Length: 137
Ligand code: AMP
Image (cartoon, rainbow, N blue to C red):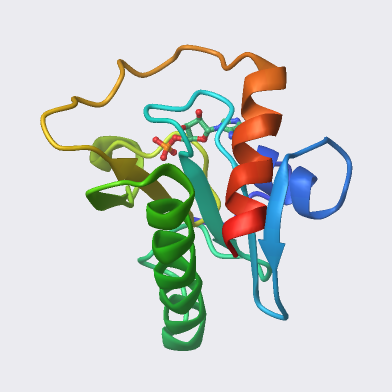
């Protein structure tokens, strides 16, 4: 399947729509998920186009995972989490909804389930959680 440069994360990378940015380096960009399934739920994406894991280059995957690890440490610290869940979906049948490679980084607390998907964040709360993560980086 081809990469569609009109996907929402490509628009975020081009600055055409806003995002609550947490971190960026030469190859990756990190921002808050607007429908967070846990406090501090963020997304790591490569800056160069890749539809998902299946067409990404090994270098893109390595760059993303290095940033995933960095964000894992940051969210653990920011929220006093007990663990981190990392999720990554490939194609619609694999659960993917936005077709630009992304990794979900979800801080977890013992015994606390993820929230149901599809619930829009309160943007003031999202911003204050983003401040906590930026401070922990
Ligand atoms: P999936 O492709 O299944 O991993 O789901 C896409 C994820 O992107 C969901 O968790 C959405 O909440 C999230 N999402 C969709 N649009 C935006 C956006 N504009 N900013 C931040 N997160 C988004």
